[in-house]
Length: 147
Ligand code: DQA
Image (spheres, rainbow, N blue to C red):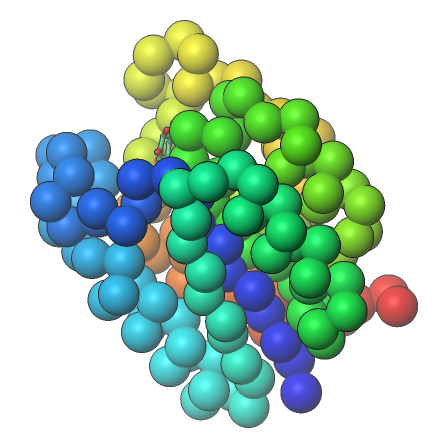
């Protein structure tokens, strides 16, 4: 069975009330529920995890190496623009991953255009709101892992 890990970075626990003009009104629980349903209807599973702490996310990525995860969908949130350690963790586990952003980071402040992840991701989805996660999970469901 295909196991997909969906990781959410800092402040994404506040979705629904956080800057709704930028991030929409959907909550993180609603996004996660949609993703789990999408996977279940195709005989796969999605595990969702959110943390505001960089170290906790690094540890969760490391755990993915041994827990049967085959694909990662990650919105690193603010860590997108700062975190070498999260990038290194993803490189270390060597699992295919997609970088997702709810907002279009290229139409915002200049610092949001820089990502520590994009060049090692399979792809990047930015600006499609919650649907971006769904497209990423659907891609993961279709993706044939080489290992
Ligand atoms: C974000 C974009 C980041 O720049 C920001 O720090 C976030 C959310 C997005 O989903 O649009 O927290 O990753």
